[in-house]
Image (cartoon, rainbow, N blue to C red; front, top):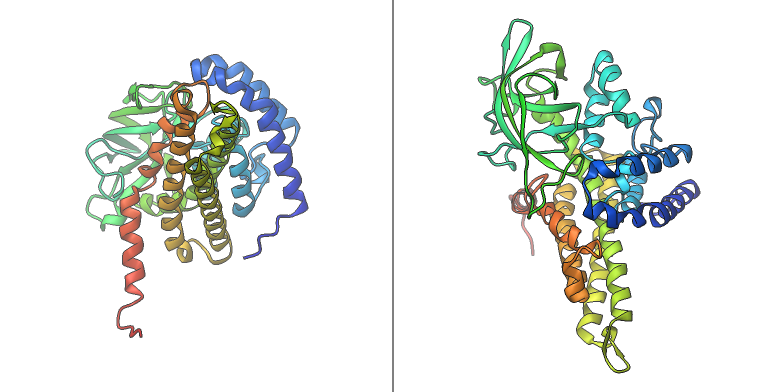
Length: 401
């Protein structure tokens, strides 16, 4: 793998880093204490600045208004923007819209692209992704109770979903539902576009996550589909290919998440080191003088670097060899980077002491909301088991000395 970063990308990253530091991070105290809707005017002002800098929608195709960066370059961008909870949103690179845009770009009809993709890339509307179900394991997406049954020219959807991220205020959902109950397990589900104003699409509530319901984009909703009728033309790709499409969405999506986590790690690592340098623990002694603090800093620096290089290598593999050849690597970075993230955030909070428990820094926000990194997009345990099985298959009939 060539780790050389082009001069163009160096300039882009420098511009983004400066923007995050000067324009976005100062917004965080308000973001941590007020409803998201109250901040929208200020957020839209920053988004317009990004558009004028021609840095909008970095990973999305140029023909739809994005920068058209490849996966490797966007990994670097995601690291930069991940240093603030608002970074990806203000640059038009946020989940779940990012993944939904990829699906619409690859599988959408011309009509679907005109109606949903173009305004989504432009940041004029938001969307949500509705797959996880209340009573079934999210780590096994072939198990699905939500059904979409044909009736005339329509599908009628019934089911119960939750953790439908960003449904509050979204214009449409991409919903995964079983359309072919008699097919093989991996060919039963389809992906369907469901406008959120459709009768029968019922957003029950925003789920409280560790005491915080959230609102607007940074929220997770419970959804009831009750005889929700949509036209059959709202299907994405061939019928029964929902699982295949989901896998295509999740592979690159995990790169985005993992590099965002590296950005978070770098941010809280900087805060941890600054705190160690400035916190007085005795006359003429700073917290940095404690060997345990020095050990934590050294370990975190090594862990961050190891995770970062693993993620970039995986992005390179996907770009050059394809997603199938990178499956083991994707599983590896998912659980490894998530655990590095949790460790670094926890150590940063510990170094800050009582201050770390407050929202006077961004650390407590990350501690609350990024614990889920070990759960979503496949729990750590599922990735470890899958990875181990694939590795062990390589040793079948193999003699070693």
